Image (cartoon, rainbow, N blue to C red; front, side, top):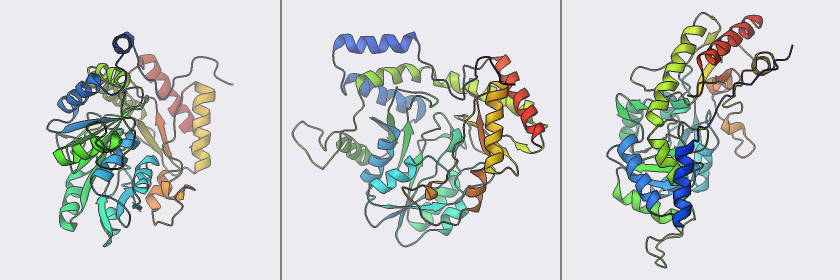
Length: 372
């Protein structure tokens, strides 16, 4: 029987009266392009989420990765190691510089890039590594920093999903050469659309500012060939309000995840998210693994949650990046291939109520039990 009630969505952006008022204020002033709101947002982002860094606001998280890589000197002839179990933007950003993304496998429990696999694919062309803090859990930055130091590589962070996460108590966004955050509507905080580079390097920060603004800091004094990747004051105004709420929302996500962990613990073939020692997890996604499932099994599980119980879910990511038509390259990634058929992300967002969490637990228990 089909569920005829209200669907619990897998994600639910929270935009309220404060955000609307902030936008109205910008519109009333009339300075809507990159201006004082962007500058204030950059300063506050560093202070709250990435202490000790300079933040540079951009029009998307992809732009943040792309321009950060360009500013770090990545280009044609270089290789950059990335996971294939991620959104395509990670590899797209490397390819857009003219460099080649090289794929390494993931840890079967955290789903983050496996340091030993990454080290095994280093060549004399390798210039850098991009661990992704997937689903909001920090990658093993201690191991990646060691690898980078030993092999003379640059270390970059894809922190698109990891606002307020940390590794051994140090915030993500403060490691390596630079980090890139996304501010897309479904992220843990949003600016409507946007991205942010964080870095401790004044030179890299200046280069990103040049690249985002047609290659100039002063009008008509173009220093490099650049892009139009600026953030507007409208988007920055939204982001500034969201910054005041992201820590509270993070606590709510973590509380919701704890309820789901307890409720799903008894299902033998459903793995709840494993959090590595030292890793902070901010639960951009609450992703379970259906042990032994095929892709078809997983898809039926997703269908049943929605149609029979009104529980939305997502699959991030069903096709490894190296198997996408835009890349299509052979890589020995057995864990990635298996995990891509078995993961399902359940609702964990701050808008969930206690009865929603109860329904999610009941639905997963029933559907998983039926498919056992």
